[in-house]
Amino acid sequence: MKNYETVIGLEVHVELATKTKIFCSCSTEFGGAPNTHCCPVCTGMPGVLPVLNKKVVEYAIAAGLALNCEITRSCKFDRKNYFYPDLPKAYQTSQLYLPICRNGHVDIEVDGIKKSIGIHEIHMEEDAGKLVHDDWDDCTLVDYNRCGVPLIEIVSEPDMRSADEVIAYLTKLRSTLQYLGVSDCKMQEGSLRADVNLSVREVGAKEFGTRTEMKNLNSFKSIARAIEGERKRQIELLEYGKKVVQETRRWDDNKDSSFAMRSKEDAQDYRYFPEPDLVPIEISEEWIQEIKANEPELRDAKMLRYETEYDIPEYDASILTESKAIADLFEATVAICNQPKEASNWLMVETMRLLKEHEMDPEDIKFSPEHLAKLIQLIEKNTINRTVAKEVFEQVFQHDVDPEQYVEEHGLKMVNDEGALRTTIEGVVADNPQSVEDYKAGKKKAMGFLVGQTMKAMKGKANPALINQILTQILEQA
Image 1 (tube, one colour):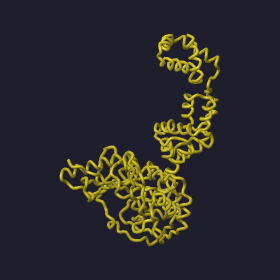
Image 2 (cartoon, helix red, strand yellow; image 1 turned 120 degrees about the vertical axis):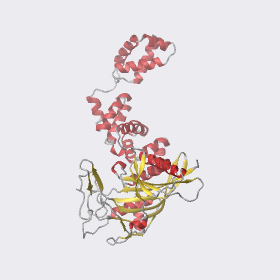
Image 3 (tube, rainbow, N blue to C red; image 1 turned 90 degrees about the vertical axis):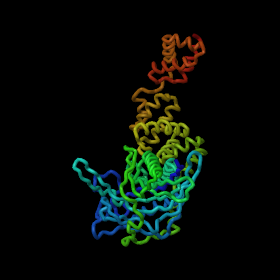
Image 4 (tube, rainbow, N blue to C red; image 1 turned 30 degrees about the vertical axis):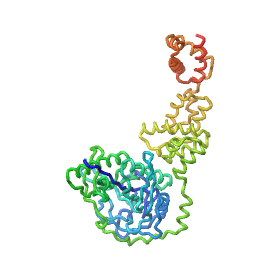
């Protein structure tokens, strides 16, 4: 079998975080009842005219600057024509000839190897609606709420060679856009969608193979699986002497395979022409500099600052800054309790565990930095031990309870009464003579067992340090 190289380029659609749509004042809020966030403009009624939302242009410029792009000072919109069952005017307002951003790049690192992924262009466009297939009534319904929601499409160069590089690129894109505040990038809500253009060629070949496109993949897991599945499919075709057909395919994650949807269109098939209802956009140097001056601290800079300002390891800083929501929560917590390492540990370990357990994204966190800081302070003051703190944190995570109030109401304060502890420990020692003998014989694990039995007898509320101190005294005297 020949050796093949995979060649991958991405078209990433990002819904912008504006309050209103790109050409009208309808809400962009996710999850409204069908056809309640639309008007004559976004439903394509005859005679209506679009009005460009200035914030869309600002967000596109901000994204372009952060992704090292050149900004097109004079750009315009074009009409992209083909049959959209969920876009009632039967064309999409997009940009072909003069996209707002061009010639950028994103730097990634995979397995210790750094690489720059080129960005061919970023263009603005409107989103289409949504088709809802009703199996019960055997019909298809249309929800126009998403029609006209502003998008930027980030088109990469075909510079990626593996699923790992694709995920690293998408992770960097998502992080950058979230930090900028131009999009929430919630893949499960369609705010970030990726089309994968993939081809294979023999190692060393200069010409690209025939590419296929897989549409609207909306999770990193499905993207990685789709890349691997399509790579294998194309190689099998070539090994059997068959040709790869240029087409658009749909990935079915449940069946772990892709299916042909339609032949892949080229630009001429869309019959692009300049949008006559919108004037060209002139972008001044002053406007660009104003947007640049307001650019927030991005992830790479934040990581370096965390290492120096908070004296935390590079690994911790990378985990904390992967999500802007976590980074914001960390900084706000530290500002209150001044315990960066403790705050880092609670966010990296328990918070990440519970997010995974509840299948939540960091952006879905409900608890306040004030309550996390209070929990850390309760531990610092020896009001509760760490075992109890984990129990309390679960309540903070799920219900944003006040930890001080919760500890008081549930009688969870740590027992520091030496007399009461000594009495309990003496009883544990008396009930476990074999463990005492094991300890005397040098089996130090016996100590851990006796500490555990004491904590059990004290319902987890004892001071572990005091238990160890008293237990050691009693065992040495036994």
